[in-house]
Length: 266
Image (cartoon, rainbow, N blue to C red; front, top):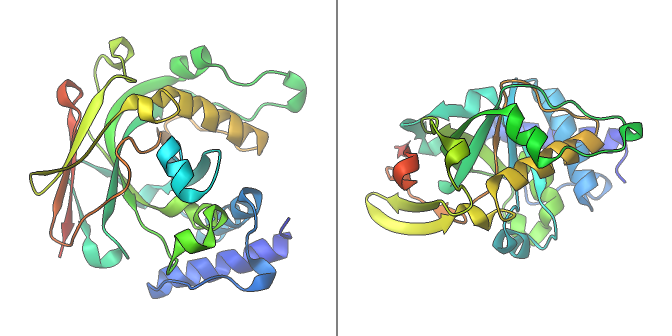
Protein backbone atom coordinates (compact mmCIF):
# COMPACT_ATOMS: atom_id res chain seq x y z
CA UNK A 1 0.00 0.00 0.00
CA UNK A 2 1.23 3.51 -0.76
CA UNK A 3 2.64 5.51 2.12
CA UNK A 4 1.08 8.83 3.04
CA UNK A 5 4.15 10.57 1.58
CA UNK A 6 3.85 8.71 -1.73
CA UNK A 7 0.11 9.42 -1.96
CA UNK A 8 0.72 13.11 -1.35
CA UNK A 9 3.48 13.20 -3.99
CA UNK A 10 1.12 11.65 -6.54
CA UNK A 11 -1.65 14.08 -5.57
CA UNK A 12 0.71 17.04 -5.98
CA UNK A 13 1.56 15.87 -9.51
CA UNK A 14 -2.12 15.48 -10.40
CA UNK A 15 -2.97 18.88 -8.96
CA UNK A 16 -0.13 20.49 -10.93
CA UNK A 17 -1.40 18.80 -14.10
CA UNK A 18 -4.76 20.45 -13.46
CA UNK A 19 -3.12 23.82 -13.00
CA UNK A 20 -1.06 23.40 -16.17
CA UNK A 21 -3.99 21.88 -18.10
CA UNK A 22 -1.95 18.93 -19.29
CA UNK A 23 -2.13 15.17 -19.15
CA UNK A 24 0.33 12.81 -17.49
CA UNK A 25 1.82 9.75 -19.16
CA UNK A 26 1.99 8.05 -15.77
CA UNK A 27 3.13 8.65 -12.19
CA UNK A 28 6.67 7.94 -11.00
CA UNK A 29 7.25 4.32 -9.86
CA UNK A 30 7.50 5.26 -6.19
CA UNK A 31 3.99 6.74 -6.14
CA UNK A 32 2.17 4.66 -8.77
CA UNK A 33 -1.13 3.24 -7.47
CA UNK A 34 -1.36 -0.54 -7.77
CA UNK A 35 -4.77 -1.05 -6.17
CA UNK A 36 -8.04 0.79 -5.70
CA UNK A 37 -6.97 1.42 -2.10
CA UNK A 38 -3.82 3.14 -3.37
CA UNK A 39 -5.98 5.16 -5.75
CA UNK A 40 -8.25 6.26 -2.91
CA UNK A 41 -5.25 7.31 -0.81
CA UNK A 42 -4.15 9.58 -3.68
CA UNK A 43 -7.69 10.87 -4.25
CA UNK A 44 -8.04 11.73 -0.56
CA UNK A 45 -4.72 13.57 -0.64
CA UNK A 46 -5.77 15.40 -3.82
CA UNK A 47 -8.98 16.58 -2.16
CA UNK A 48 -7.05 17.80 0.89
CA UNK A 49 -4.49 19.66 -1.21
CA UNK A 50 -7.01 21.21 -3.59
CA UNK A 51 -9.15 22.46 -0.74
CA UNK A 52 -12.38 22.77 -2.73
CA UNK A 53 -15.72 22.19 -1.05
CA UNK A 54 -17.09 18.70 -1.69
CA UNK A 55 -20.68 19.01 -2.93
CA UNK A 56 -21.23 15.30 -3.42
CA UNK A 57 -19.95 12.02 -4.80
CA UNK A 58 -19.98 9.94 -7.96
CA UNK A 59 -19.83 6.19 -8.35
CA UNK A 60 -17.70 4.83 -11.16
CA UNK A 61 -17.90 1.37 -12.72
CA UNK A 62 -21.45 0.81 -11.47
CA UNK A 63 -22.43 -1.19 -14.57
CA UNK A 64 -21.18 -4.54 -15.81
CA UNK A 65 -20.03 -2.90 -19.05
CA UNK A 66 -17.98 -0.28 -17.19
CA UNK A 67 -16.43 -2.89 -14.89
CA UNK A 68 -15.36 -4.94 -17.89
CA UNK A 69 -13.96 -1.89 -19.68
CA UNK A 70 -11.92 -0.87 -16.62
CA UNK A 71 -10.89 -4.39 -15.64
CA UNK A 72 -12.46 -4.30 -12.18
CA UNK A 73 -15.11 -6.28 -10.33
CA UNK A 74 -16.50 -3.50 -8.13
CA UNK A 75 -17.48 0.16 -8.30
CA UNK A 76 -15.33 2.98 -6.93
CA UNK A 77 -16.05 6.45 -5.48
CA UNK A 78 -15.07 9.92 -6.61
CA UNK A 79 -15.82 13.37 -5.32
CA UNK A 80 -17.95 16.07 -6.95
CA UNK A 81 -16.45 19.44 -6.08
CA UNK A 82 -18.80 22.39 -5.58
CA UNK A 83 -17.53 24.58 -8.46
CA UNK A 84 -18.29 21.73 -10.86
CA UNK A 85 -21.87 21.03 -9.73
CA UNK A 86 -24.10 22.73 -12.32
CA UNK A 87 -27.80 23.17 -13.01
CA UNK A 88 -29.34 22.31 -16.37
CA UNK A 89 -29.24 23.76 -18.94
CA UNK A 90 -25.52 24.18 -18.39
CA UNK A 91 -22.71 25.53 -20.53
CA UNK A 92 -19.09 24.51 -20.03
CA UNK A 93 -15.99 25.66 -21.87
CA UNK A 94 -14.81 22.86 -24.12
CA UNK A 95 -11.23 24.11 -23.90
CA UNK A 96 -11.27 23.56 -20.12
CA UNK A 97 -11.67 19.81 -20.66
CA UNK A 98 -9.28 17.33 -22.20
CA UNK A 99 -12.25 15.58 -23.74
CA UNK A 100 -15.95 16.29 -24.08
CA UNK A 101 -17.71 13.14 -22.91
CA UNK A 102 -20.98 12.56 -21.07
CA UNK A 103 -22.85 9.88 -19.15
CA UNK A 104 -26.57 9.91 -18.25
CA UNK A 105 -27.29 9.02 -14.64
CA UNK A 106 -29.74 9.35 -11.75
CA UNK A 107 -28.57 11.61 -8.92
CA UNK A 108 -29.92 11.81 -5.37
CA UNK A 109 -29.72 14.60 -2.81
CA UNK A 110 -29.49 13.67 0.86
CA UNK A 111 -31.81 15.27 3.38
CA UNK A 112 -29.84 13.90 6.30
CA UNK A 113 -26.30 12.78 6.91
CA UNK A 114 -25.12 9.18 6.67
CA UNK A 115 -22.05 9.23 8.94
CA UNK A 116 -19.47 6.45 9.05
CA UNK A 117 -20.46 3.66 11.37
CA UNK A 118 -18.20 2.19 13.97
CA UNK A 119 -17.16 -1.35 13.15
CA UNK A 120 -18.67 -2.40 16.48
CA UNK A 121 -22.08 -1.23 15.27
CA UNK A 122 -22.26 -4.44 13.30
CA UNK A 123 -24.61 -3.39 10.51
CA UNK A 124 -24.25 -1.75 7.12
CA UNK A 125 -26.68 0.85 5.87
CA UNK A 126 -29.72 -0.81 4.35
CA UNK A 127 -32.04 0.18 1.54
CA UNK A 128 -34.77 1.50 3.84
CA UNK A 129 -32.36 3.82 5.64
CA UNK A 130 -30.93 5.09 2.39
CA UNK A 131 -34.34 5.68 0.81
CA UNK A 132 -35.48 7.65 3.87
CA UNK A 133 -32.35 9.79 3.78
CA UNK A 134 -32.96 10.94 0.19
CA UNK A 135 -35.01 14.09 -0.36
CA UNK A 136 -34.62 14.52 -4.12
CA UNK A 137 -33.92 12.45 -7.21
CA UNK A 138 -33.15 14.04 -10.55
CA UNK A 139 -31.83 13.25 -14.02
CA UNK A 140 -28.15 14.07 -14.38
CA UNK A 141 -25.28 14.18 -16.84
CA UNK A 142 -21.80 13.48 -15.56
CA UNK A 143 -18.98 15.17 -17.45
CA UNK A 144 -16.07 12.79 -17.90
CA UNK A 145 -12.57 14.22 -17.85
CA UNK A 146 -9.20 12.83 -16.81
CA UNK A 147 -5.55 13.80 -16.71
CA UNK A 148 -3.97 10.68 -18.23
CA UNK A 149 -2.68 10.37 -21.77
CA UNK A 150 -4.11 6.82 -21.83
CA UNK A 151 -5.83 5.95 -18.59
CA UNK A 152 -7.16 2.64 -19.86
CA UNK A 153 -3.61 1.43 -20.38
CA UNK A 154 -2.78 2.32 -16.77
CA UNK A 155 -5.73 0.62 -15.08
CA UNK A 156 -8.59 1.35 -12.73
CA UNK A 157 -6.42 2.48 -9.79
CA UNK A 158 -5.30 5.50 -11.84
CA UNK A 159 -8.89 6.52 -12.59
CA UNK A 160 -9.66 6.30 -8.86
CA UNK A 161 -6.58 8.40 -8.04
CA UNK A 162 -7.67 11.04 -10.56
CA UNK A 163 -10.94 11.55 -8.67
CA UNK A 164 -12.81 8.96 -10.70
CA UNK A 165 -12.42 11.02 -13.89
CA UNK A 166 -15.15 13.38 -12.75
CA UNK A 167 -15.12 16.63 -14.70
CA UNK A 168 -18.43 17.94 -13.40
CA UNK A 169 -22.06 17.07 -12.81
CA UNK A 170 -25.14 18.69 -14.36
CA UNK A 171 -28.46 18.28 -12.54
CA UNK A 172 -31.91 18.44 -14.07
CA UNK A 173 -35.04 19.44 -12.15
CA UNK A 174 -36.03 17.20 -9.23
CA UNK A 175 -38.48 14.39 -9.98
CA UNK A 176 -41.50 15.28 -7.86
CA UNK A 177 -42.84 11.78 -7.24
CA UNK A 178 -39.65 9.76 -7.55
CA UNK A 179 -40.56 7.39 -4.70
CA UNK A 180 -43.56 6.18 -6.72
CA UNK A 181 -41.50 5.65 -9.88
CA UNK A 182 -39.79 2.44 -10.95
CA UNK A 183 -36.31 3.88 -11.40
CA UNK A 184 -34.88 0.50 -12.41
CA UNK A 185 -37.22 0.40 -15.40
CA UNK A 186 -36.80 4.10 -16.22
CA UNK A 187 -35.31 4.63 -19.66
CA UNK A 188 -33.08 7.43 -20.91
CA UNK A 189 -32.08 8.48 -24.41
CA UNK A 190 -28.99 10.59 -24.96
CA UNK A 191 -28.92 12.85 -28.01
CA UNK A 192 -26.02 14.93 -29.33
CA UNK A 193 -27.21 17.93 -31.33
CA UNK A 194 -30.57 16.23 -31.67
CA UNK A 195 -29.21 12.92 -32.99
CA UNK A 196 -29.64 9.73 -30.91
CA UNK A 197 -26.28 8.71 -29.44
CA UNK A 198 -26.96 6.23 -26.62
CA UNK A 199 -29.70 4.79 -24.45
CA UNK A 200 -30.05 2.87 -21.22
CA UNK A 201 -32.12 2.13 -18.15
CA UNK A 202 -31.83 2.45 -14.38
CA UNK A 203 -31.32 -1.30 -14.00
CA UNK A 204 -27.93 -0.93 -15.73
CA UNK A 205 -26.35 0.31 -12.50
CA UNK A 206 -26.21 -2.51 -9.93
CA UNK A 207 -29.80 -3.40 -10.78
CA UNK A 208 -31.21 -0.12 -9.42
CA UNK A 209 -29.75 3.38 -8.92
CA UNK A 210 -30.49 3.26 -5.18
CA UNK A 211 -28.41 0.07 -4.91
CA UNK A 212 -25.46 2.18 -6.00
CA UNK A 213 -26.16 4.74 -3.28
CA UNK A 214 -26.35 1.96 -0.68
CA UNK A 215 -23.02 0.64 -1.93
CA UNK A 216 -21.41 4.08 -1.71
CA UNK A 217 -22.68 4.83 1.81
CA UNK A 218 -21.21 1.57 3.08
CA UNK A 219 -17.96 1.80 1.11
CA UNK A 220 -17.29 5.30 2.45
CA UNK A 221 -18.34 4.28 5.94
CA UNK A 222 -15.68 1.55 5.97
CA UNK A 223 -13.17 4.25 4.99
CA UNK A 224 -14.24 6.50 7.84
CA UNK A 225 -15.92 8.95 5.47
CA UNK A 226 -19.54 9.99 5.80
CA UNK A 227 -22.10 11.41 3.41
CA UNK A 228 -23.31 14.84 4.56
CA UNK A 229 -26.74 16.42 4.56
CA UNK A 230 -27.30 18.27 1.29
CA UNK A 231 -24.70 16.34 -0.69
CA UNK A 232 -25.57 14.95 -4.11
CA UNK A 233 -24.67 11.43 -5.21
CA UNK A 234 -24.72 10.45 -8.87
CA UNK A 235 -25.10 6.74 -9.20
CA UNK A 236 -23.34 5.54 -12.34
CA UNK A 237 -23.74 5.65 -16.07
CA UNK A 238 -26.86 4.16 -17.59
CA UNK A 239 -25.71 4.93 -21.13
CA UNK A 240 -21.94 4.39 -21.09
CA UNK A 241 -19.43 7.10 -21.86
CA UNK A 242 -20.34 9.01 -25.02
CA UNK A 243 -17.84 11.41 -26.62
CA UNK A 244 -19.03 14.82 -27.82
CA UNK A 245 -17.33 17.58 -29.75
CA UNK A 246 -16.71 21.23 -28.94
CA UNK A 247 -19.85 23.22 -29.74
CA UNK A 248 -22.17 20.24 -29.27
CA UNK A 249 -25.22 20.08 -27.02
CA UNK A 250 -25.95 16.85 -25.16
CA UNK A 251 -29.45 16.13 -23.82
CA UNK A 252 -30.46 13.26 -21.57
CA UNK A 253 -34.18 12.61 -22.10
CA UNK A 254 -35.64 10.65 -19.17
CA UNK A 255 -39.17 10.80 -20.58
CA UNK A 256 -41.77 11.69 -17.97
CA UNK A 257 -39.01 12.02 -15.36
CA UNK A 258 -37.52 15.06 -17.06
CA UNK A 259 -34.39 15.95 -18.97
CA UNK A 260 -30.91 17.40 -18.51
CA UNK A 261 -28.77 19.39 -20.93
CA UNK A 262 -25.19 20.58 -21.33
CA UNK A 263 -23.49 22.53 -24.13
CA UNK A 264 -19.73 22.47 -24.73
CA UNK A 265 -19.02 26.07 -25.64
CA UNK A 266 -16.18 26.89 -28.04
